[in-house]
Length: 68
Image 1 (spheres, rainbow, N blue to C red):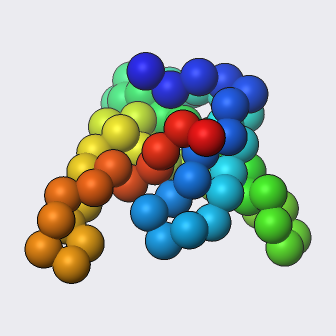
Image 2 (cartoon, one colour):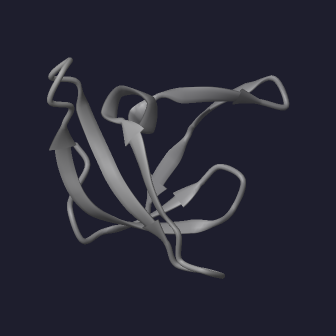
């Protein structure tokens, strides 16, 4: 499960901190609100299931985000 306040590393190498877990008011879909800890520190929103999913990198399945 995703933990608010924890740092996560994207499979491409950048780090983010989870600010909140939220829910879409129309669809009730669970969302993760997270902020880049580099550059302009942009705040992003992504569906929880996508945040937790695995992606294929160089033919291998890896987590999209890993807890630091």
